[in-house]
Amino acid sequence: QVQVVESGGGLVQAGGSLRLSCAASGRSFSINFMGWYRQAPGKQREFVAGVSSGGSTSLASSVKGRFTLSRDYAKNTVYLQMNSLKPEDTAVYYCKVVATIPPRLETDYWGQGTQVTVSS
Image (cartoon, rainbow, N blue to C red):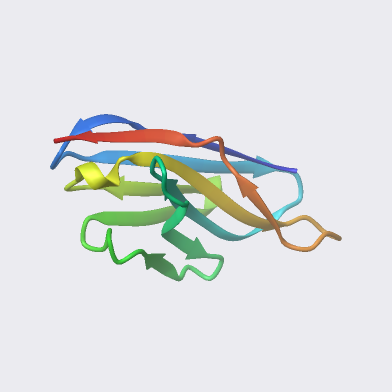
């Protein structure tokens, strides 16, 4: 089993910044992907940003130029730096970790979610 713990959400005014952290822990696992998704009230969960095991990073078009994703491989942690926040960024942000624990196949693990609220 892989545990996924998020932190860093909160309330911020439009134009402000927040930094989210996501740490994965467990025994004998390898990470294939770490990323962030978000879900606003009444909407489906959507991809925000992610990084593969090879270091390839992708960002949703709605956050490019404002959000930055970084990864600390030694700590199995990813950070989502969110700048120039807009009210439409308000959502619960979830961290997703795709990991392999032999002999199992790849499995998705999700964090509990952290609330980000941007006031206008």
